[in-house]
Length: 163
Image: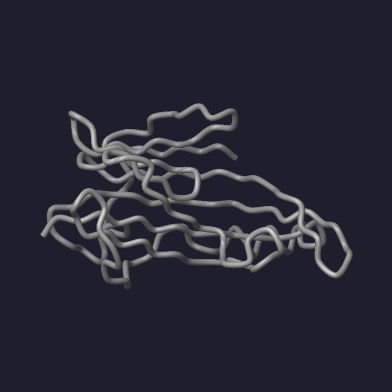
């Protein structure tokens, strides 16, 4: 049974957690895991696993968590800053760059793709304003058969870093 696997790792911190000790602790958190989740929904009529690791601290900006998904059209699905396109050459992964420009990261049916980015956003809690910083890593693949160890056994075919 062919399926999509999207594995997201979120590392979050505020300005007070940017010491060398905190940076070392964040760097020790893996960006690749065995897949432990079952398909929860379908994308382009294929089962889809969306697995999240790491932090997802609720804030006044994202009270229900950071990762949002939406169907943009019959051939385009979006989650977080990534879009999956059902194109003529297979399933393609795109990254949404600021300014609503898309960058193609490659075909999901040829290999797996790892994409990382950092960003920050302002949060207001108990009348205090602060910055929440994030490093987000996405591991994405379209497989003909489920393999829980897929990301651990292979190197990514494409690595995209916007750090």
